Length: 452
Image (tube, rainbow, N blue to C red):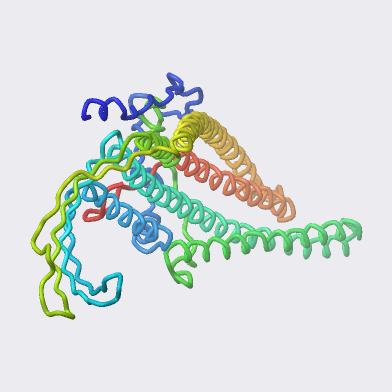
């Protein structure tokens, strides 16, 4: 019987291995390769070097409600999984109840002591264990996904907040420049150095600048309240309203192989848990094709309440095997086992697709990060050239060879160049956060918390 039971168990199928041998895209950086730090999935946001951002992430990890739900569900899954093996240990039960005989003449009060031991043969116990492990792994991956999403969203909204605050300052500067330009235009019109059509053009430019100044204020409001919700608050902290410089990202190099990084993605862990769950269900379905065996024992004590005497068979224990043998429904059970096999194949196909999607997302993230970095560098060069032109004009103005009118145009160009650079730097940081979200980067549980 034990030999047949061992042969009936379902083996865990090998997971597909479709990962490439190397990454196609690598982030370009002027730092020599030997000086580039390797990627750190657990503390990646610290590359921004912003203490306030670090504090926000820490606060969110302790206060975010979605993460708290995921933690509690993980604890529940672990508690339930711990009972699987216990249900196949010998069980002892006691009952006390009153009853009557068929003729309703005598009434009895009975005490019963029952023992049952389910053997869990033919893969039944193994299938239940696999289902329990899959449930825990799925809950752990979901908890990790909550961490990954939370940190990425904190970083994204923080960068958008700081970028919006800088954009607001730049927009105010542009408005002041356009307003002063309009004032000088009125003077130039009076001296016949300009015509009314030029004033109309400047009025339109000022109106467009006023409308554009609303956009960063909207972005600031969205980021503030998003950060509040992510950190478990109803209102943003007053300290967040104080403008601060954009964090300076020190991007590292992703040199690890895909197989070393992608296995930490929550969706890949969930896909693997789905395979294990399906294999467990297949094992249980196949075990149902064989007899279910258990050992039972009982001891019954009966007292006749009507005649005030004990029953005739008091103190006689009964012990023996309990057998559930499929007969007329064996075909139905076989069909269920075949369906479970198809579900295993389906989960393996789903695992392959998740793996392919994971590679595509990371490769895309690396490509976008590289392009965002190049865009930032080009805009920095443009700003430096624009500032150099503005400085040259200021020197000419001091020598009386230029005018405030010309200087305002240079100031306008510098302010616009700063606007573009600020937006590009925010996009660069967000691309960095998006890449690490694709990699499944998240902090480990704090000391004392259950590990994922």
